[in-house]
Length: 131
Image (cartoon, rainbow, N blue to C red):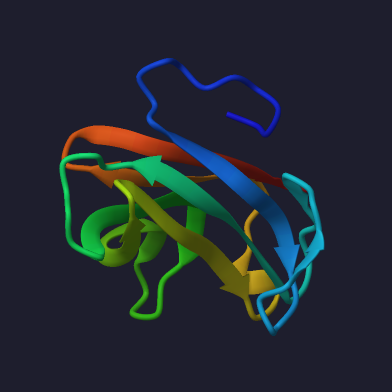
């Protein structure tokens, strides 16, 4: 789902910022197309409804799927899925997710898909195309 496309009614979150970021995590360029070939940081920030939770932090799962990269131990890396704590305010989770490519070998052309989920429910989806 590229920015500007409408999310389905059952997706309770929204992307509030996306694109290429500086090393200080400041948005440099709002874009879903990321240039291949060198060091770059890209990602997004979101808000997601988690109404039934009163604490100030909540665990969601951050996933990234992407074209295969050569793994550190000789295998292929096609992404990850990790639990992360996010800030909560008035029933809304806030956070950012992204990827830092150190060089061309860290970034394969194709679709890179980030998902923030709560159990089986996808709350936020952001895709980038590496060209």
